[in-house]
Image (cartoon, rainbow, N blue to C red; front, side, top):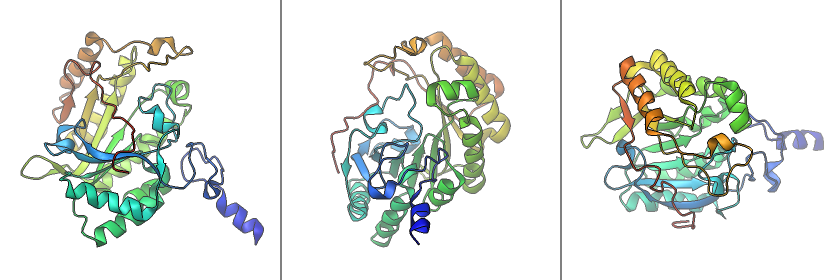
Length: 303
């Protein structure tokens, strides 16, 4: 019996399958245990327009991440160093509080490793009157098991597709399998979600948005991502081309190529490439994004 219990405690939820016993408050590769840890829960105005709208997106920032990208702009929470432990019942209350504040949706940022607990909290919230759509905001590195849990409560997928090059994925995210894993997950998202659906105000109610963050010097890989998305899904998804990459203030001594912003020429080349392919269902970012902060303070607001 003890052997069976020990086996069941081994975490194999995410593609890392690190084997940690997260149930006893030990941290897995994601940097956290299975105790819900949240760093901020508030209206957020800096997502794509069909997500944030005028009222803001009801964004819940979860601590920990299975990718740990070296350039992560949310590293304070992705490394599991910020946030507050909360109960599932408190998370249910948070969802309802955000709806009461007028949020267009509930936006779950990096929920992958807490998907089981979030599912239970959302079920309770819906029983108590939660009616707005749920956005799963993910890096795209999802196992089939995670996807199957997440899809049960996801109306809108807001997913990254970070790399097509496996060597880049290994160098920057320690995951050479990222392209294969993320593409498989994206296939399921599109298959199960269908074409984008909007309300009369232009707010997305259902659909898939794929973010392509252009990294310095990696225009060709970004083009490969865009070409793959267009060839695979056409205009059945929304593509978000992002130029907001900002080098971390603490520096990246082992990655000097990432210690600059993306140039206008690099981003224009990517946008022109997308337009030449015929892509119309897309968002682009205009000047000033690298000076503006898209990183909210992880100060436990709303937690």
